[in-house]
Image (cartoon, rainbow, N blue to C red; front, side, top):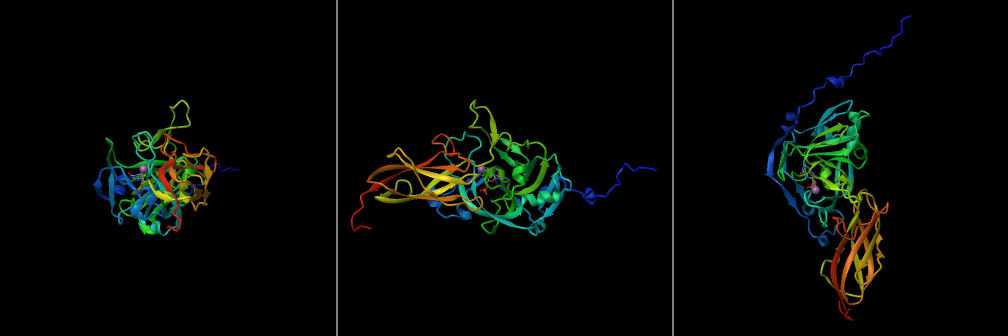
Length: 363
Ligand SMILES: Nc1nc2c(c(=O)[nH]1)N[C@H]1C(S)=C(S)[C@@H](COP(=O)(O)O)O[C@H]1N2
Ligand SMILES: [Mo]
């Protein structure tokens, strides 16, 4: 009797599909306009009072210039260590199940300077798109896949380094989380050119740098991406390394908070005041303390629960006698990580106010 040891050959129709070349993917880019580095700063914290930040108040960060994309030629390629590589046109992507998520959006700040100053490039928005996990499952990652590399259609020079695309990576573990989207809308509107339209990556809880705009390719790999935006830029000294040598990628957002009301240098009628603001981190924020330079102790504010990955409102009533005060807010996240007092990009926010006597009968 003959024993068959070799399994019959199963035809895999996908093997025969021809994947687009890099050149073909990049035909969707009609040029870079305007070229070069561009930052649009957000308004000061006391003007960021609405829970959802409108697009025209949301910062923008572009390293090499904005890609002008021809949506009729646009393709998203999913390839690398997957069983079934494929491409999607924009109409095909728009037909997949959609998710809307509220998330804070924060830029890490300059990847060239040490992160010692508090930078305020932050907002809170709603993104709509298809879960990245849905696309990855369609492609069926191979067991050795560990990272998802993402590529944008933009190219050019930033800080003397020329690249033929903006390239980032995400560990597969984060990429498969339900909050990570391949997004095509911001606050219910199609993404503008500056926002990375027609399609960008959105990685709630992680710094904006990871959210590749003008997305054209997602590639599964077993090693970290080697382009300048994951090696030269956006690697920082790990503040938890006592030797001060180890580096870490700029990935998750650290605990942070800002005072929105009152505004800096405000003159307020006492003694009863309301102080409020926002707090955020990759994990939910569980505590915000408010300090003044007049008291040694910090008092605990009320912190609202978060919606998806949104920033969280906090509020506290204080009774202050007339005088000059420095107010400070300090947030702590669910696992107990507290904002540092100074010297880091996420150190406590402080501002000065003056409290004056309440005039009886005055308004
Ligand atoms: N392709 C591409 N994606 C990019 C960038 C870029 O220059 N090119 N900038 C990144 C950085 S550093 C940030 S903070 C966010 C900013 O997104 P926004 O401009 O929509 O606020 O986009 C990220 N995605
Ligand atoms: Mo950024």
